[in-house]
Image 1 (cartoon, rainbow, N blue to C red):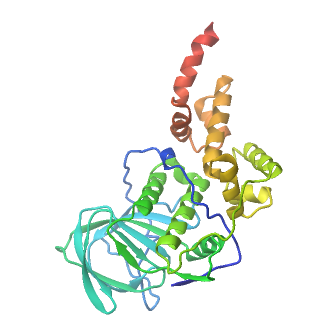
Image 2 (tube, helix red, strand yellow):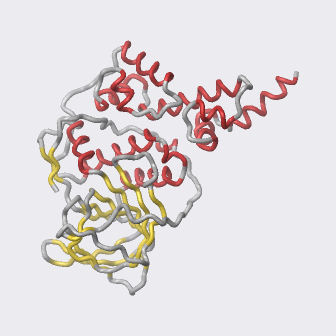
Image 3 (cartoon, rainbow, N blue to C red):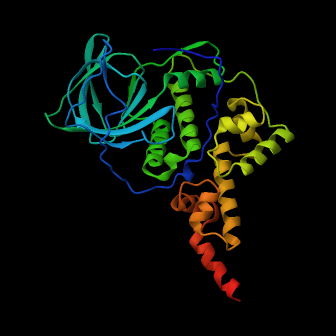
Length: 339
């Protein structure tokens, strides 16, 4: 599908700290909702889901507006001339398998090892057939991006051309894409999925990577942005502190200082050494510590007052920033209070 850049600019600076996304236990939840990422026939009809298939993980209930993340388990079967309505990345997270994809009118054999990547641009038909025994289940992580969102990211990157086309591709691996995908999956499995800035940062990172690595043109910025003017930086930091308990977004902070999200994110990184998301998380953690040291708040109350989803969400980031849990911090202070 051809993507035409729109006039609306958005954040496109790829900067996030994956070390902040703590490893968590794998949690599988069988979903009763219908698949959000579905196959469509070329005549526009929705392809009925195989009754044996199931969604074991979904971002459908999160605040992420431009991206859907789903993990599917379904019987491997032939798909003929089907397509997606979004730009879809499929990552095999199960056992290796062999299949055939139709390319230029001919089926071509491909061995898909674990972590193999397939990109299916929206509204582009494809066909595939597995070379496995009947009943063998596929275990696939799907990432689906809104094409309009990707167009806005393309405009934010200030492409040399006003058009860029994503190309259907299959790769044995893509470390960067895998890195982003696992961070998104971890976000769905944890409370981080409820954080709008988390999804916003990673959706943008994913779109930038697709445009750079899977498009017909290689985008690049035309100008250097430099640092934020001192007054604008002060206003941005003030706005963050005022809104710590709110649903902060990059676009909201950028609007407060009169800049586009794209321009603001670049200059903020140059000025502080952190992306807006990183800064907000750390500001929330430091404010939580300040509240806890007063002795007037429980850990759960402090988490609520600074905008974390729950106590565990605060604890994960607290450990990363300070090297100890909030509980241990409070434990250290009790002997002093008794004295």
